[in-house]
Structure formats: structure tokens, C-alpha cells
Length: 252
Image (cartoon, rainbow, N blue to C red; front, side, top):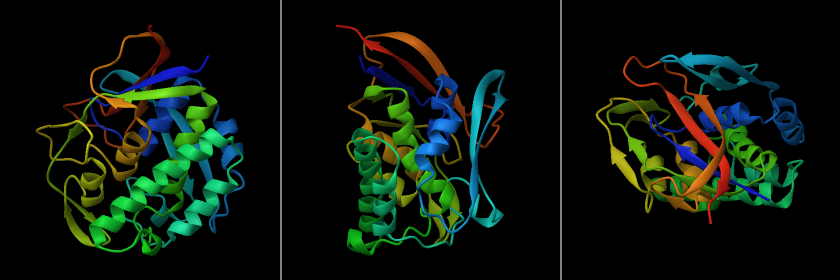
């Protein structure tokens, strides 16, 4: 029987945090790498998942290590590598994964592409993923869908997403938080403002929830079988920078 996954984004969500939490639940890094192996990137990369601590809570720090450090930064705000929408769609088709994983990966990519198109006032087909097109970002999007398949997740829910404020520097200059693409993705998603001057929800994190969550709100009635934690890059002094996920069976 397929399982239910509930996300508890008390500190926020990013693609790498999501995959780290899934690894903490038991996803094999080797299995994840095998599913992603057919992807045609112009730079070699490797996956890393290391135990870490955030405010005394153990979690997994998942990273995509690219040979070019300029393309290895997380959260999609420092990239100048251009990848077109159709390139990423082709990568989805190339995944060594089942139909459900490919459908989920395509849903995430399509959500993000539509948000970028709306922000920049262009057609989806003309979207250049200069900020979300680098190797690590693509792996985050497609890897999230693969991780769900490896866990045999049938349904997914999420708590409301906490939204920080302030500004972040990206390829277009200084952008307000949430980033414009993130704000677009959060339409029809339950959110709550938090008094934190940091990016708590990244575009890939928002896309995962917007594309795949069947419901956003309180945790549904479920019998929890395991709990996992995925770590964000920052080690914040006031909040454990972790995404908590709970997997199990829906009650009733």
C-alpha cells in the first residue's frame, strides 16, 4: 500500500532540504543517482548526503557538488548558466524512473516554468532557466520526484509555508522576498508570514508543494511510521533550519 508523506516546514522548504529529509527516511543515494544518471549535463557532478546538526536536532545535509563552484551554489539565485524549458523537459523524459515519478517531475518543472513566465511576461516556451537551470537546481526538482517514488509515496500534504522578508541578490539584481517566482508559485497555497529576514521558501521548494501537495494545512490523521529531517544551508541561531517530514498511512 502506498504511503502518505506530510511536510512540516516549520523553518521553510528548499529542494535540497526536501531530498535530504527523504534520504533521512531511507532513500538510497545510490538509487537516486542511478535514476538521475541518464541526464545530459555539460558538467560532471556528484551527490552528497551527510549527517549534520541544527540546534541539537540531527538531519541530513543533501548537496549537489558540481565541478564548477560558481554553479554549485544552492537556492537558485547565483546562476548564469542558461537552460531552456524544453531542455529540462527532455531530461524528465530521460529519467530512469517510472511513469509516476516522471509525471511528478514534469509537474514541478511546469509549475516553475509557468511562474517564471508570469514574472517576466513571456511565454513558457521562451523561459530561460538562468536562475533555476543549473545542475543542482535541476537535480533538486527531478530528484524530489524520484525520492517520492523510492519511498512509494502515493499522497502528500504540507503544513502552511512560512514566508520571510527582506531582499536577495540574483541574476536580475536585488529581489524582494519571497522571490517573485516563489510568490507566483504560492498562489492558492496556505502561507504564514514570519519575522525572519531570510529566504525561507525557495522557488524549487515552493514548486514541489504547489505541484504535488494534495492539501496544505494541518497534518491529516495518519499513523506515522518514520520521521526525517533535511537541513538547509544556514545554521540559524534562532530556528533549527530543517524541513521535517513524516511518512506513514492515512487513517480511515
